[in-house]
Amino acid sequence: MDTKLTLNVDKNIVEKAKLYAKSHKISLSQLIESYLASLISKKSGEIEITPLVKSLSGVIELDKDFDYKSSYTEYLIEKYK
Image 1 (tube, rainbow, N blue to C red):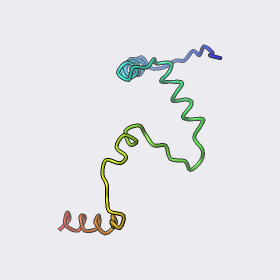
Image 2: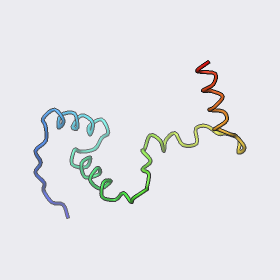
Image 3: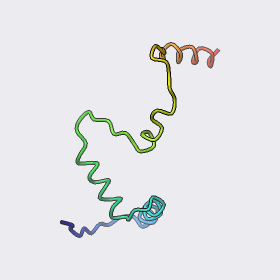
Image 4: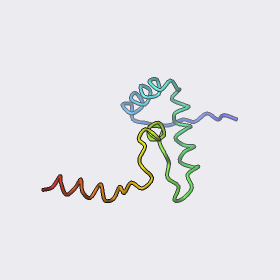
């Protein structure tokens, strides 16, 4: 069941939020409802993965024995020589 909610929000923020919602093809009400739902559904210690990160998942494939720490250390040593 939907309930009407009245909020007082800065006019500039409302205008920017409307543009954001329009660009994502959702209503401002859906945007706010989604945000509020995400706030109350988070479990402690749970990390939220954003849609952008989800879309990038699997773009790069690395060998199973790839040592990212060693590789990053080498990168930093080169960078700060």
